[in-house]
Structure formats: structure tokens, C-alpha cells
Amino acid sequence: MSHKITILAIEDEHSISNLISTILTSNGYKVILAHSGKEGLSLIQSHRPDIVLLDLGLPDIDGLEVLKSLRTWSATPVIIVSARGKEQEKVLALDLGADDYLTKPFGTSELLARIRTALRHSQQFISPDGKGPGEPFVTDGLRIDFDRRQVFVDDEEIRLTQIEYKIVTLLARHVGRVLTYDFIISQIWGPNGTIRDNQLLRVNMANIRRKMEKNPAEPHYIVTEVGVGYRMLDRK
Ligand code: CA
Image (cartoon, rainbow, N blue to C red; front, top):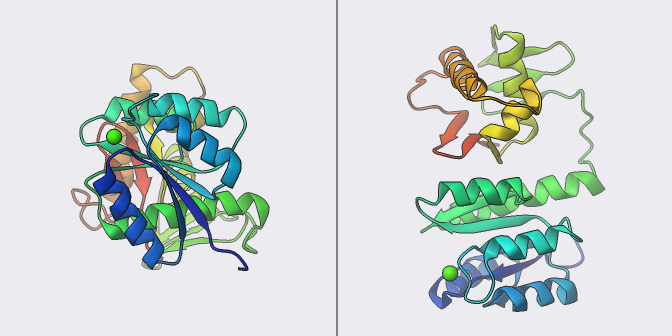
């Protein structure tokens, strides 16, 4: 790659933006910092970053407003940086087009993993990494053969129902990313989700884990993001 990947961090807390800057710079990224929403929006236009890290609690305009405004003209991946316990806010941000979120305080490896995932998903639209839709999905002992609609864990086939298979493949196609409950429900059962569908999703997930996981209480492949949704971990 001829130029460094540029990441814009919109964050008013200097200790956090300094931390982000240190971690990302030492890992080969170019970092631009903005300390307010308006400064952030103007830097996005002038610098066209590859990824935006967006704090939701900003001094001038709400982070969600920044996201809304950005999404009217840009598909740049946005990772929300949010305080612990603000699950509704995270769900709202994901529904408004954020790609993922980090909860403060976050660790180095978590930050880097979220960025790698967001980059991979954004680049798939431009330059598919040679993987056709029919190629199997593989991550640490889990293999999905889309052509044959078969799922294997450690080379042993596991028997999933149609719905369970749909849920697992949906998460696999978005590996590394959190998918909200509402998004999963709309993809599996259609857009007019009801409370009953939430219940159905939970039941299906319990069954999937019972079949796929060695210890369903401590899942290795699909984790619950409490109050938000599910994420298939990227273990490559
Ligand atoms: Ca803040």
C-alpha cells in the first residue's frame, strides 16, 4: 500500500485521544485528532479519513448528530466510542449506520481488532480479497460450506435447522462485527419484528450454542453483546 491508512478520532477527552493516537501511530496508522463534532465533520471533508472513531459525548454537537450528518454523504466506516452502560445509545448509533463500537475503557488489542474488521468490511466493496461468495468460511475450527449448506466444528458436521443456519451464516458474513437484535430479526423474519421474534432469536441462539459450542455458557464463536446484539468473533 502506497499511503498510510488515516484514522480520524473525534474525542474531546485529551487523555483518551492521546491514548488512541499513541496506539494507532505505533501500529502504522496516520492519526488526525478532532476535539469537537464540528471540527470532526470539517476534518472528514478535508482529509477523507479511512476510518472515523467517534465519541458520542462531545462538547458542541451530539455524536449521534455527527453520525447522522456524516451518513448523508459518506460511507466511511465509523466506530463509536461510548461509555459503559449506554446500550440504547449504541443500538441507536448502529441503526444510524455506525459500523461498530468500543466501550470505554478499551484495550489496545480491542481497538486494533475493531479497526481491522471495519477496514476489511469497507474494502470488500472496492477490492474483494479473491474470495467468491461460494468459498467456505473458516475461523478457528468452525467451517461453513455455503454451497452445501453444511456447518462443521472441528471437522464434525453439526445439524442446524434452516433458521439456525440463516442466523449463523448472517453472523459469519459480518464476522467481527456486532449485529443488533433488530437487524438480525429483520434479516431472518422480515422487517416487521415483534417481541415474539426477540424470544425466538434467543431460543434459536441457545440451540445454536448447544450444538456449536463446547461450553455454551462461555461461547467461543458467537458472543452476546449485552443489550445490543450478537457478534461472531474473528479468530483468524
Ligand atoms: Ca466525551
